[in-house]
View 1: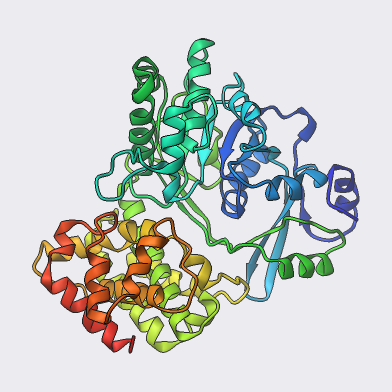
View 2: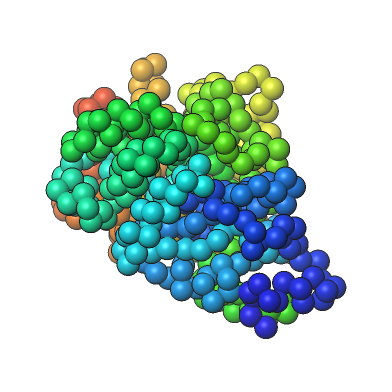
Length: 471
């Protein structure tokens, strides 16, 4: 039996504890468009939206947009865009059918349909998980990189967009022309100040060709900062086969995740949004301390685990964290990061750090080290550089932040495949001896600011840690 609308009744009566949608899917209108439909969105924002509609109803159906590849649409369309969300902790698991996703469009094949969806009068919220590189910002300057291939194309061909910013600009221009209200654009990517960065990128992009549109966006749209947290490994073919064997139905696109989930959203909206705050999310005045804690603790630790894990031959995070050397290094990195942000006094930092180690140890999640190791040039500036800069300003050298840079360098100089938008440039770190590799990496201004690149103590510490790793 294949998962689809017609099988929901059968699933409700089969006696197995499977959570089903509690609203009439056929009557739900789309209120959200999400750019970047992947496993994380389906386990996080879509899950919160599902919970909101289950409890409070409302027209908050999601139109998903895949910017490049049709794989997600092709997997979900035959099952009426339903999918299973399986929450796992070691040997226990819980299955929920998510119905919030109305359909998935592929931007490269259906650009006009995507633009019309974004401009639809029923849509009040646009959410994004397009990874750090999807914002088209230069890491060093924080301004729009007009030389990025898809950005350059769209600035010169605004009627045939390819980039996130190109599609958003075209759609918002239609909303302006049709006298529709502005929307709330919510970045759900692991970027510090993600809402502000999305706003900067979009306004700079729009101003190149249409200053009046940029002014309209600035006046009518809102870009709340957010912090998102949930570990969601990529779904493998093996996991899909195993799922079908465990349940009474087949699902071509299940998602597997952990019980923990967090979503902190700045209270800064252009219009109505789902009552996410009534189903576990937090609406706050300032997201900054939460996002700093997450990026510099969870995400930074993930990067260290990924690079050390790959170098030590570990496949998954759960396997790598059993390695005493890696575990001790992760705990030390958390301690280095702790003084660089200030959380509310009621926030138990020690408990948070212990809970992270327990989450890393979850054997049910096959969170692959190589998956986390991707896009290091986009992640390191968000996760590690603020920690190093904080310590430099206080005349100290953070050993374990430098160890993370050394581990990344070791990964880059190894035989592992480097999946990164700056892969061509990063390959230069393989040239010469280890000291030359350190110098080459730190000199990359797209990644490292001068405060770090020109600091001799940082270079020396990265080299020492590289030698300790026997690179």
